[in-house]
Length: 303
Ligand SMILES: Nc1nc2c(ncn2[C@@H]2O[C@H](COP(=O)(O)OP(=O)(O)OP(=O)(O)O)[C@@H](O)[C@H]2O)c(=O)[nH]1
Ligand SMILES: [Mg+2]
Image (cartoon, rainbow, N blue to C red):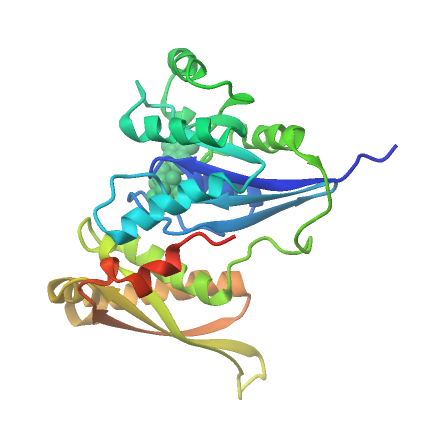
């Protein structure tokens, strides 16, 4: 007998920097969400679609829970918590290196209790600890909630990530595919371009500057090359930052830094889009954008 098709929505929640986006990309097998070693990388909910022969799992990446310092930060936390009430299964990600339950994780546990959904606890980054160290962490967390499963994994090394999909599938109900089975994200090309540029800036710049950045693509146009008639994208984007001094750092000496950001972003985009890309970037200062409602609303969760 053929297996019944299963489908459902899953959200991934956890403190900032625990590896949520890394896990999502590894499960989908495509780079959908940007990942960096800087906290607060993901700013909004992003849907990733895992298509398999007998199932379709829609996993929603969310911003990391952190102590907010602006309207943007508050919105990011609200988005992460908001998603939990709209899904069938929750993945709660923690780090194997944790020794106790900190205030951020406490808050998440409270929300999980309120949501009262099937929840899988995922202990990520097991490549950084000895196996024995996991036992006390497992004990600590099992006492807090009746998790449907507890899975120690390494998203980076792709260790036991397949088990995550297996456990999710066990918890899903029979149902149809919600998205075309060829699709793997609901992000637009424009969002993808914005996020790619932001990722390169986050990776290349130091601490204070990157968190004040946001990227807006002003133009994204498909054209055909006159030389060989092949299609290519013309993309124009602005990188906004909080201060004049930041602008100088982003542009760099003789424009070197901006050039680097642009080159790395273009290479990534060419890979993802499968065609040549012309990318032009500008830098502008917008001091209070993180507290400007019209901008921050872009990061709100809407289902
Ligand atoms: N050693 C190790 N590092 C990992 C693992 N998974 C993720 N990382 C690293 O952890 C850092 C954060 O990863 P992200 O996937 O951006 O984390 P995130 O939870 O999405 O972070 P936010 O979007 O800021 O909330 C990156 O430097 C990853 O390479 C893992 O299994 N082992
Ligand atoms: Mg992330």
